[in-house]
Image (tube, rainbow, N blue to C red; front, side):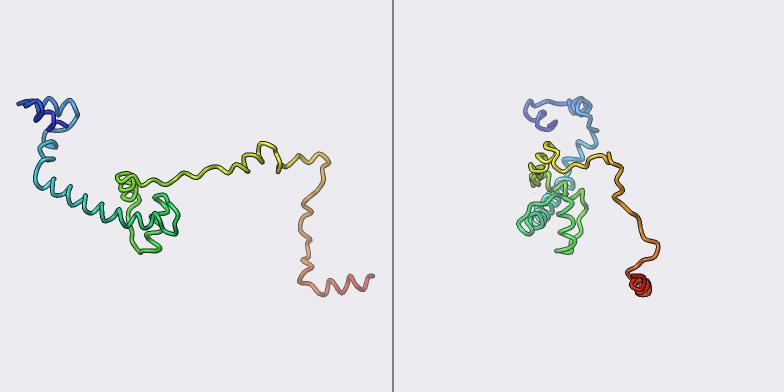
Length: 151
């Protein structure tokens, strides 16, 4: 932005003022235009393009669109590739890969509105939970014999 402004209006000795205005250090401004910085940006751009293809593969895995967390799990489990979650999110944001947001279930909303499946208070003080029998009768054939003899 600073560089474009200076070239457009052919300004001289204004870099210091413009850097202060935007909040960028002058050393950072000059460092941005070095060959090494330009080369690093190009390498990162190419690497991002390669990773984008891999992320798109995971994004469309089983014909379902996924978010960043599911992409991370799919890459690890299906392709044995480990990427940082922040890296996946950065690339998704950079290339406009968006996961659709799930819609709310309309039937659930309707059931809540009609109060179809609600629990009412226990006005009759009925005891629905009887508790556990002290002796577990399932595994005691002797107990069953004693009951038959009493009849």
